[in-house]
Length: 291
Image (cartoon, rainbow, N blue to C red; front, side, top):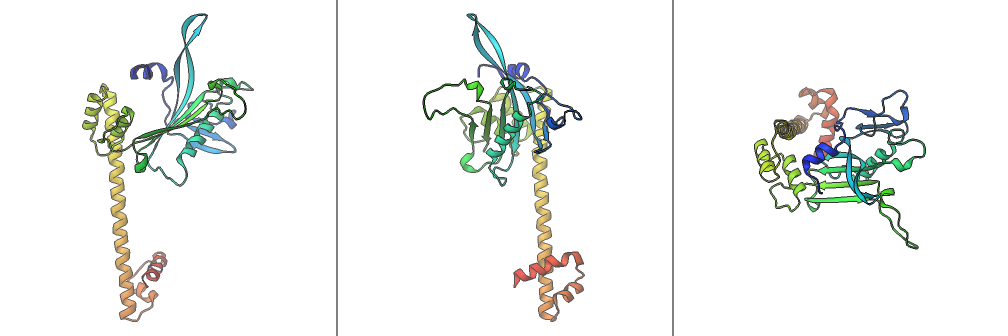
């Protein structure tokens, strides 16, 4: 909280984030390269392969006093960032986040620590940016983490010994809505398919005071091109499906008319209309539905 954005980027992002580049194979160390906690692909023989959108390491500055004088200590973190369009993909998204955290912890064996040196385990974060959440989750940030609960007696374990994973669900919404939280507005603008590149740059400069370097301008333009490309592809697929459905309905109606007026069987009607053999089963099903 006390650091400037540039300071975080320059001092505490420890390595260049890996985006679909380097595999980590903890069960096959002799035959595959092992990268210290930063690969985006985590493979084990028994659990299969998990591919992370982005995974990188970072360090948190922490003040502590040693021998009566303040000093700086770095606490290592491993972060995974995912962009998610579907909030309900057929399973609870939070469970997937927890699973990703567990994989990032288990993959540290042999890379971050060996033997019984569990004290070296680094905390992991799985951060999910949900671009199209349900209405009741729009403009929200929720975290899920391990906590200490005393059921009998009162004990106090050091938080760093169990606070080893956190899942963050960042749910975006309408970028033009009044949002109290800056990061939500920032991400909502960046991921919006309605804002053009120039509009995004203006908001980032005027509202968030982010300097538009040439490299950053290119990144913003690329994001706009990507969102527009996805939108256009969706429209194209929708049109193609609509045309295909219309043709199927028209041909089904023609088959039915031939059967009624010419007293033909379904096979004879499809022969007359020269319908391909591999397509006939679906028209047979459509005729059953129309009865």
